[in-house]
Image 1 (cartoon, rainbow, N blue to C red):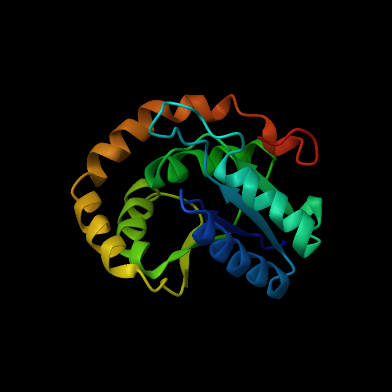
Image 2 (image 1 turned 120 degrees about the vertical axis):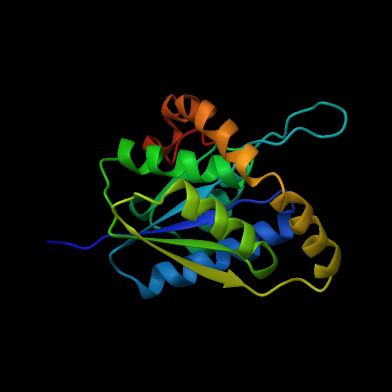
Length: 185
């Protein structure tokens, strides 16, 4: 039996942090021949109500193709989720739609985000048939305000999970992971 590892790189609205996470995910992929990388994150809306052109997941994927010669057969993208709880709900839908069943999932995020991400994923996946691991990226220099924000966001974890469960069916309609090299948004 072949063991499969999914490396789940969480998106973030901050571009520089997205690419730091993607870089760590790609390094893990190169060290783990049986792995597939999944870049996760949807489009955000700015303060004027305009949606971004590309989703967080698609930006990381495009960068990996351009700058790291990523093999398209080793990558998936999830472009619907708007937060960490939705990442947890949508990621399995994406890999199942590609007929993949991992033995291990490694979630890649920053250290300042780890406590909340761990709480969300352990809660969402408590009955999952795969083992869950985390790989952290070093925190940026301006981590203090980000850490404070994470403490505030931690208060909403259960509400975020409830909303994400309701929205999970929307993930099922996403087909972009099956056509990676064409029109990823």
